[in-house]
Amino acid sequence: MKKAAGILYGVGVGPGDPELITLKAVRVLQSVDIVAAPGKERSIALEIAKPYVQGDVIELRFPMGLSGAERERALDENERVLRGFLNEGKKIAFITLGDPMTYSTFAYMTERLKDFQIEIVPGINSFSAAAARLKLPLAEGDESLAVIPASKLTSLDKVLDEFENVVAIKISSHYDEVLELFSKKGFYSALSVRCGHEGEIATFEPERYKGQKVDYLSLLIGKKVKK
Image (cartoon, rainbow, N blue to C red; front, side, top):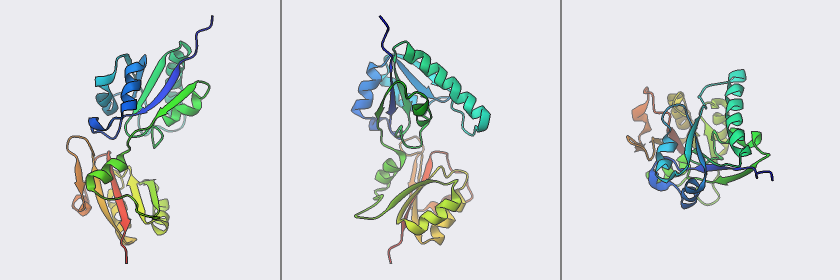
């Protein structure tokens, strides 16, 4: 009798505060055979998940900055590893910081492994946690909201003309440019750095950090000044 194929879970463990992991995420982590964590180095997501893990742990290589053939080779290898376990009937929890369907490494695997059963356990994302820490509503009433990577500076310029609330993520390499663009377009902004992690910053004075290299886990929330 052929053994049933396994199940792949995409599990968001929240933005960093270990208390922001969901009950469903904990239940899945306790029930699976394998927990897959992205990152060759120490995985922040794994540190959050570790108290609940009862199966084996594997680390998958998702180095940042890869492109072209090198990136495809890394994805091919991760697919090969996961597919092998799934063919053995294993249940796998692929853990990610934040939410697995929002700018997540897990998304790279969903299309490649769609011939298996996939279930998603959503998590609290970084900008929701940052807004809570800052006590700053992301949007009110019928206001519009956009979330955009800071690398898309040309698009960000246009987005700021169309939306009343804008979250700029992945700002580390473009901090000064994004901050200046927010100001030019009539937005006030708040900075969140390492929300839920050691050394976090939550401030309505983002100008204090101009000219500095902010942490990779940083974002700016901008709100159009009402006239």
